Length: 632
Image (cartoon, rainbow, N blue to C red; front, side, top):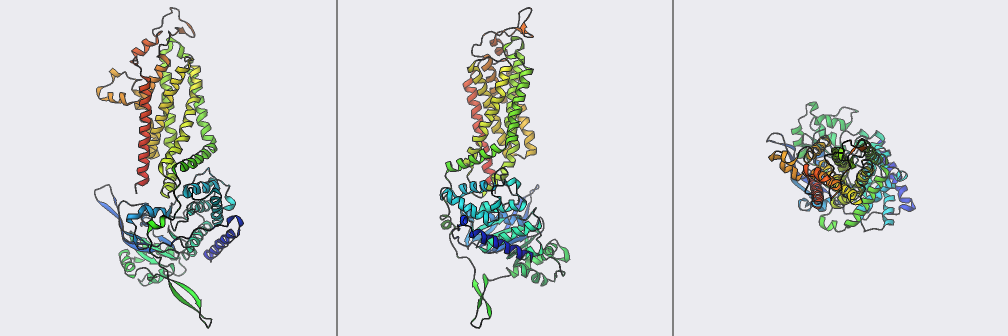
């Protein structure tokens, strides 16, 4: 009764939505899609040379207009099967998957365009409002095929359809679990995909939100969509709402058919459900081996019995002439069609510049609303700048404190390298979760995403460098010459952005727990060459790192910008006054550079090398991200 009431309420909300003037919108008619799979196996590599088989040749059929639930205990293989059917997992899979009778293998890219996959975790942008998130998705998914007014109307229709209209100005971080799940579904409904895959859509929801979510999926299936979801242990009322049940235990299919036929099937195997017991709970208990159940024998019986509605028919009630209702079977199997022909009817992908524009707009909104983290980054750069300025006050114009200035330049490069690297190293692994969902569901391609990200990150990092450099440069008494300041700024910005590129690479290829260790180790290792050891003191087998260290190039270039280019003699001061004997060893800057083995400057080559390393690492990062996104 609870499920029926929720279903009626959802239908009522949809009717109200359709009656609103601003929601006079209808989706284009999509062909119905049936999924048939035969002998699906999935193997993974283990620590030893042996391989482990997760799925053992399962077969089945999921039809349009039905809400299908894949059930089973933890570790049974239900999420694995869902990932394979959705195209999320390809490697290690064997078997045949057909779409309306046509093999999907050679048309996987076209299949991904007509389906969507909603993961268990609702990976949403927390700082965007519901409507902002929907409009962004509409721009990216629909491209230039519709005007902004049409997109807005479609967004309003879907928000009303899913009961989110009154929350459209609420940030996603403030939505409840059920509302976040509905928003995840709404984002993918913009293209009206005929196939929806959902992994554990009710996880973390209360009973009311769970029933509402399943009711929504039931209504979407009633409109002709093929809805396939995994679920763990539904309530009895929710269990009745599923049109089709596919049960897995230990990698084998132990039942497929309607939920109402489950208990009769198990009873035929002498597995009788106790009175007043939840059928879903009973199924899980059978699947884990209780009641002396033998999984292999149940799987064999299920394979022999096949789908419990063995014929592809649906029932329709009509009236005879005498007024008595009778049921007439009508064919339900979807007609065959070529996926390629279907995808030609879909909206054209948004052009590159259009994707960059809207992704950049989204990043700008998120950056503008991330006031505290960004303000803290800028503030800490200023604080450290003042601290350095106080500690190394006026060392830049004193022959008696040349080594103090030497340490200041090293500390500046080290600080900016570390902050440029770690800020993105820690944040990108979290960003990647959202990127993976949006990219898999064909929101945008990787190139515009990278461009839009860098167009926000690079200017902000340059601002941080300037905020640090200006106060510390003045307080440490560096030469007040524009050419020297700009050269110093150029090298520090270059090393900071190169460190940022390494931060992206580390964050994209390693888990956070490892990334926080690798980043500082690389920074410390590269900073040794050129500062702690002169070239002649470095062992021959380590000298290659001296040449490849971009940190060394930045450090030497920074010193050359301050002491090179025929700088005049430095005053010999002690405690701010001329020394008693008037002697300082490094009154001539050239002497200091010669002893530090920096006497042959080539700033153009040094900065070109640093920039080249930066671009190379960014390319490696993009390649690594592409590999992770397409490693299925």
